[in-house]
Image 1 (spheres, protein in one colour):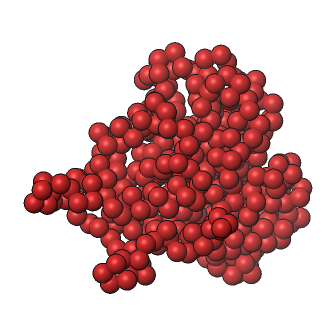
Image 2 (spheres, protein in one colour):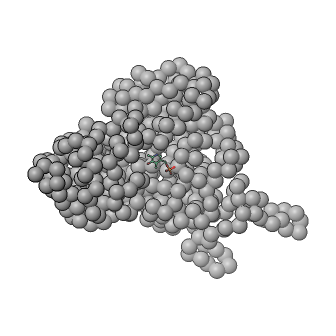
Image 3 (cartoon, helix red, strand yellow):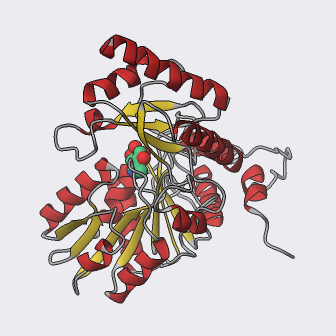
Length: 384
Ligand SMILES: *Cc1c(COP(=O)(O)O)cnc(C)c1O
């Protein structure tokens, strides 16, 4: 028998049909506690939902299968999962991460490193040699994203794994933008995959969740699992159920968003009011060849435009969009746009003329038209 394909696993949600009613949809187990039978035994082996809930376990089993992982654990948000992982840094450890990356995780690395007595080095993510040069004998953790948010620079994941493992460091990948539908992170040598399940995995902007998955069931993993159960950053059963529902269409949503983003990138690549399109799906992108090898089913719905203008111009373009909503987050079925430097605040190193788009699954022509009209309207307002 061949392995069940990714699409089939998603569509069927790893669901065993209920023996009593034959439900084709998984049930939601909202009970926080589970009763012992007359023999004093727990019939399902679960005692209290902070330690394990049937719906949460089902979502974790599905994600583990999709990721090709031995185990996956869900948390109440992406950053709760990231905190459990980054929290394993010890006094004297060294951690390496990109200079530009998802700013929330970078803030967390800075905070945990300083509190735990670890040292952090942030490398230039646009230079392919910079990661290996930043490593030291005491580097315990390397944290990467690929593509990098919000410049969409590409890091070669397999090369990063080889470098990290040469100093026995744990390679962690933030795969929020690149779920296993497109990037087989564990096969590329990543040790622990982190995902904000709030993004593509759920895909409908109605669940906050985070996930870690791994094949390395070592002391670090035991500490992470124990930390979640003790500090209580677990996912609720309703959220887990919604997440399972979202996962059923993950491949379809991801491919549709990727196709839309590519159409937008191509349309604006040689546009008078656009200085540069940042999207690894374009042949002109410096990381395209590596991206093609490690993003096997789409380059994601995430792209940025560097507009020809200053911060004020870029902010105005974002405000003048009508179909793209001016909101944070990414990976949902609806398209969003953000002026990233404003969102990240005064310490941001993101260019002022950068607008980040999370492209959804609407009609590509409508999305292209929306960006066109926003650019024209802004030119009329600010340059006439
Ligand atoms: C949203 C996001 C996170 C944080 O996840 P939350 O679910 O918001 O806590 C981490 N990394 C990336 C790339 C994200 O987009």
